[in-house]
Structures are given as C-alpha cells and as structure tokens.
Length: 254
Image (cartoon, rainbow, N blue to C red; front, top):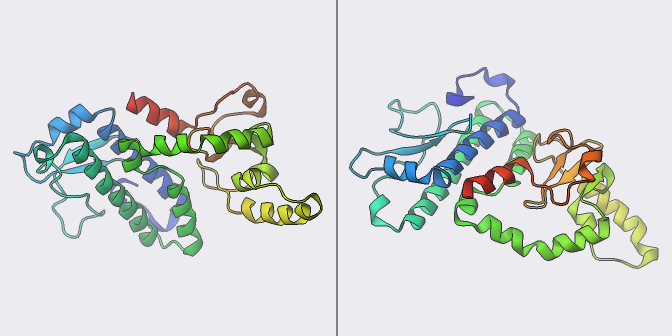
C-alpha cells in the first residue's frame, strides 16, 4: 500500500489498518529506540525534512515529494529546523503530535480513495483508536494511563477469575459494571452485554466474532486467541498477558 499505487477497489479497512500499524511502529522506533540516529539526521543545516513511517515498520527522514499534489499526504515539513531551539523531549513530543496527525491523514486518505462506506470508516477508526497515540508512547502518557487503571484491573480479575474469556463474557463493561439487585439485574445485564458485545473488536484483525478471546493486561484491548497465537490451554499458564504491540513498545522504550 506504500505510495498508494495499488488496485484501489480491492482494499479493506483491515488492510488500511495494517498499513497504519506498520507506519506507526516505524515512527515509534524513530522517536524511542532509534532516537539518537533520528536526532542526528534532523540537522537544522539541511533542507526541509520530514519523518516518514513505512508500512514495513521502518522509518526514514527525507525531503518531501516534489510532485503536487503528492501521491500521499505529506508529513509536517521542516521538523529539523526546530531541533536545536527546543528541549529535546519537547521537540520529540512535538514531532510525535505531527506524526499522529499524519498517520490519520494517510489512513483516511486511503479510506476516501478506496471508497469506504460509513461502516468501513467506523471500523477503521475503532481499530486505530484502540492503539495509544505516538505522542502517548513517546511522552509516557500511555504507561501512566495504564497505571491509573490498575485498581479496575484488580476488580475485573476478581470478578471474572480470568481475563481469557469466551465470546459471551469478553467485554470490559459487563465485567466492570456495579452489582445490581439480584431480581432486577438478570434481564438488564443480558441486554447490556448483548449491546456491548456487538461493539467489541479484535485489536489485531478488527473483526468481532470468535469463540476464544484474551485481554492484554497493559492496554486492555481484546484479541482473538488465534490472532495472537494463544490457545486456551496456553492462556491458563499466563499470569500477565502482553499483546504484540505492548511487548514491542516496552522493548523500544528500554
């Protein structure tokens, strides 16, 4: 999907999301794990430079495209000029904000070009919104939000006994809902569960229906077991499950 020069009428929300996730991973590497290299490449003495995330989870600092209009929306121009005029952390955070904006622009450029309908655009947005922003990863806000949710995680684990659940018990809302009177709670909870279940999407493939799910203890997203290669038998021996994205982000920040 790099460059957008593909057969447009065959693309899906899931394919655009994979493109988004790959570009996002590359930009996170540039601003965390590869930050020294990124910093050196953004020499203020050079021309206007942009940070590009590529679908194969790599990144590059380069000049913007010469053609107008470009094949894809262009990232923020001239990120190198502010490098020495700001504190490094503030500069990285600013680049992260513009990187988030660019990723959304690219994703919904594809959505428009591929003719997505309302349902497909909503599905794409939900998959994207389940991931922390680059800004949250770079500034540590994503980790802080996770810590603040820890009491809820403990409560949720006590009620469910396990964070690996079949489809009918996989929503956070149903597991975190306050207890109601026994006589009144049955029908109301069933209706609530049915409504919430329809909105739960796998953090990997973006679809809903499956038999076995597992929840990441870090970002609290749900995944089909088969999408993250976790079986019910294997899940019984996992004390704290981290999804592929959270595992990657942790290594990047190390």
